Image (cartoon, rainbow, N blue to C red; front, side):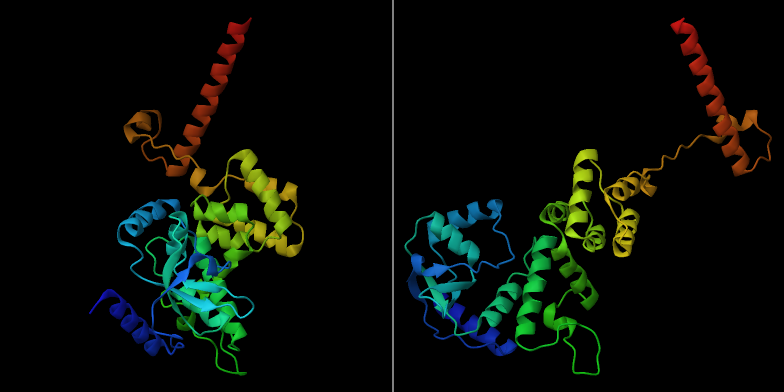
Length: 305
């Protein structure tokens, strides 16, 4: 079996398993690059580190796996369903034609296939998954399916499995919340400068509040903890969050920033009673440090005279 036959058989097996619409034609055709356009809602990014090896492979072997496209009913072009990176690589290599299979499906069906065919990538950013889930939910909603992922007497709910086979309904909702973040904060989630959980909490802030927060982050070079993010969310929902409150909350010490000093027992035991409690030891050390600090200040004052 040659590569083209294998590709078509695999495609037909997948569409049969999922109940998706069959290809308009099982023929792989070479289509002019100028007649192909990307899906501009595509939530997945083409990373530069992935493009070089892909370009090298296409330059040497050509495009082995054809792109899947659909006819745009409003114009004489074909929109990519699957194969955006291959299309970009081909464009960079100045190819004039690329192999495609044309699917006779709706925009919503195309969006669902686009999302599902990329969700299992090895490396996927939180923002990519967030907009992918939102894209699929929007497509399912336009198909007339309930997308609240909650039980209801009105009709059958959309199961989490219909949206994702790896994330729960609550986790899908949390990912979609990230689409409410301003781009600068969302980038920080992608870069792991802000945790996923913190990003979800911050998504409840208004755009103006998020902008004020980002300005503080940029100026003070600090990021909110989960507890701080929850405080920001609470004040936002109460309608009392402003730039001053943001500054006040962000300047509060984080739990993981509390310094813990360990001193061997034998270093202080000779200065204290043998049955001293932990609290008494802590108080003793605090007073000792305070006394020594005053001693250093007195010495500094004498030296300045």
